[in-house]
Length: 121
Image (tube, rainbow, N blue to C red; front, side, top):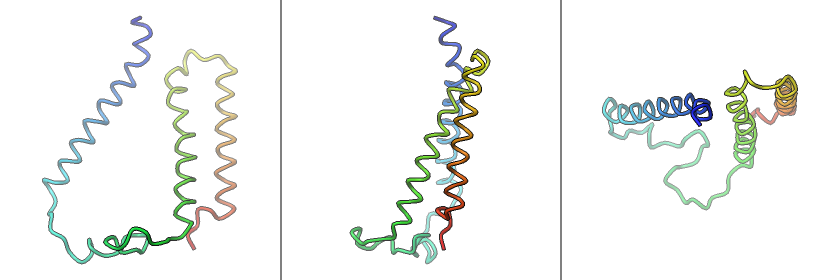
């Protein structure tokens, strides 16, 4: 049982440190910055819409495309974490299978890049 838990100890430490740093940075941003609003904070954000307008307005489909591409590539990259944890005990087939997976992921990313899905125009 201790051998089983020792594999997950590094993940636990990583989650603990990242959670602690997130909490510290979150509260430090309230303590160290001014909280008064100005014209820049109340202006339209990157999407160009008024943040205090009606939420039922239509907007460009490119926002959905960027969100879907982010989710796809972000979820595929998350497969690397368990692979990195057990990398030392993997057989050679599993090692090269992950490289095939990363190659396919890279081909997909280059395809999206060449098609212009990452360009905003």
